Amino acid sequence: MITIHHLNNSRSQRVLWLLEELGLPYEIKRYQRQKSMQAPPELKAVHPLGKSPVLTEGDLTLAETGAIVTYILETHGAGRLVPERGSAAYWNYQHFLHYAEGSAMPPLLLKLIFSRLPKEAPFFAKPILTGTVKAVNERLIDPQLETHLDHWERSLGRSGWFAGEDFSAADIMMSFPVEAAGSRIGFGQRANIPAFLQRIHHRPAYKAALERGGPYAYA
Ligand SMILES: N[C@@H](CCC(=O)N[C@@H](CS)C(=O)NCC(=O)O)C(=O)O
Picture (cartoon, helix red, strand yellow):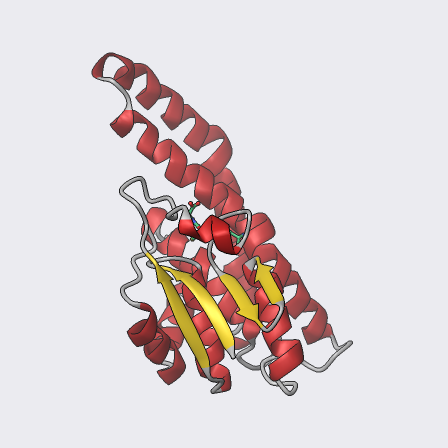
């Protein structure tokens, strides 16, 4: 039996969604974020990184969403949610599978960390930090994020999905950066990205995963 070590309100939601799309049985072991938003120490007993998601099945303990998604698809997917191997869509799919955590999330994480800095600083440091954060946002983070959003908008313009003509696991992987960008910076005038979000939110498996996983707020 597949077990997902699931931190509330986290990336782990994508794995539950994939399992629901595939109709596979699984169990959830739940962990609650601490006040600091960090995972509780019990997760380190499951995997040394102490992050979620982690999948366990038999003797296997696997961390990192992209690896977990690939494992589930290769061992239990029966070819579903992956474009035809070797096709152009397949390589686009591979791009988004790796890109979601490898390239899209880092600037979004920077944006989140920098936005919290002035709020958490002592009062005398707030003005300096506010100015520094504004400069870093304007010169570094925001232009990078605009480039990422343009890439998503253009890619979704082809079929409404990130890779090929059909919904695939690349869309599940990309959902987290897309949701995070929506709550941190918005999509500007772009239409394809919010339309993608609407489409995924209507999928029965997405809703079923939310019911099992709990509220999800993309903070
Ligand atoms: N790239 C990793 C990121 C894992 C990760 O940072 N997970 C977050 C949940 S969104 C976490 O466990 N945060 C709690 C913490 O860092 O203590 C993946 O996709 O699995």
